[in-house]
Length: 144
Image (cartoon, rainbow, N blue to C red; front, side, top):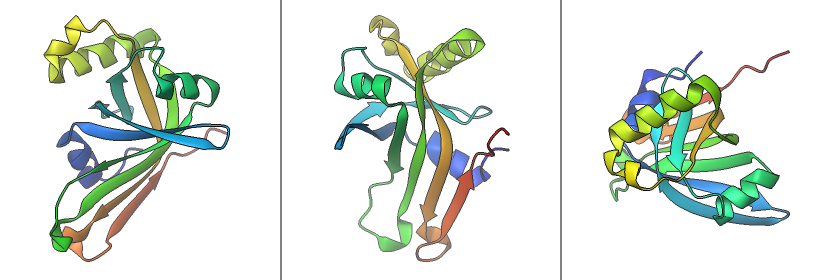
């Protein structure tokens, strides 16, 4: 089951995410362009293997992040906080992820960097347009 359509639309209308990783007890944040694989509810981005966030996620793939709308108007505040698992894209998903990323960022074809996905397992979307502090929470059902 995918999240509420307002969550999907918000993610699709933006293009920069902040990703948080952790090495031991030391957190780190990085920013990157992304695209969404809607059906899989995965965020796709490219990053070199030797970056700090990829190095840390290789040791601990559990990540968190956010996507926000910059505004000074309280009634327009929107933002997504998420948790998930970061992994190098592989298999059938790889072709789909690369195609989606290059469609949104065609100049990325020149970078040659690996493609990664964050499989979102938890999302909290705040949207003050529907009332102060209005939140939509989504959590992926776990396989038993």
